Length: 288
Image 1: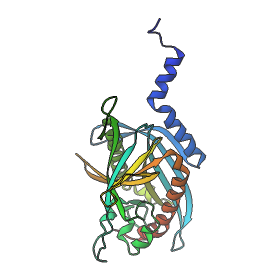
Image 2 (image 1 turned 90 degrees about the vertical axis):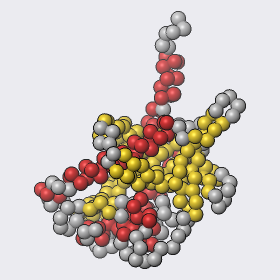
Image 3 (image 1 turned 45 degrees about the vertical axis):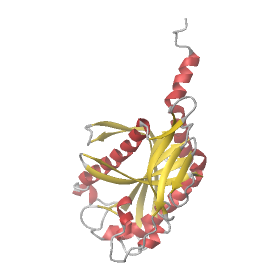
Image 4 (image 1 turned 120 degrees about the horizontal axis):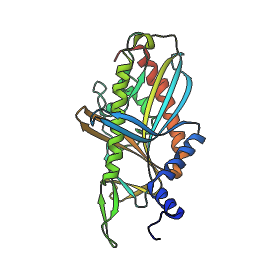
């Protein structure tokens, strides 16, 4: 009978679900040295319901900071996966505005690290608030270039012959989930920081940095008003913000083509080490 669920139909349903691509990326990240958790569930406080992230990938290392202290470091990569046939588009502009030394860098609010401290509760701070922020930026893959991309959308079929530029619900849900995850992590961190027995135990000082990533199979393009022409890219950082009942969250989403995953992870680890050594060493001993 035509309405029977055959093995071929089951296979098609599985591939249409996106899970095979998600598992493919999880396996690749595992091969690159990350601890993997697939379909990570968390509590979305603003929506008062559970949320789910495709992949949480964690990399741990021990580093010596600029001031010669030994620190336990954790890099968390929070991943949404998209098996896209039509491209994503990132919109941006030239953002290379010189700031006076005494002014707070506008980029500061997009970059956070979490650290223990020599005394008192741990910090959630931006390394760009410290002196020497240009030295940190020069080694940070999300801030090296002059361009800043602030908007993300995609191409969809309008009908069998035409296309449209559109932010689909599925992409918006992924962005919202990543925003909610960061917010949930910050709330959990602040709660954890009140546990004096845990925080003042005999363990190495620690530094934690979280990066958000959308890994996709198809193409993505950059468009800026200065260039006025779409440019295909493999890795693009998009500066986003989202607001809900718990407040505003500013975060950066790295758009990464799956073919560039090896290069991206290399960039990510270099960024993480630079931020931990230069920004983290000061956060450990200062209350910001």
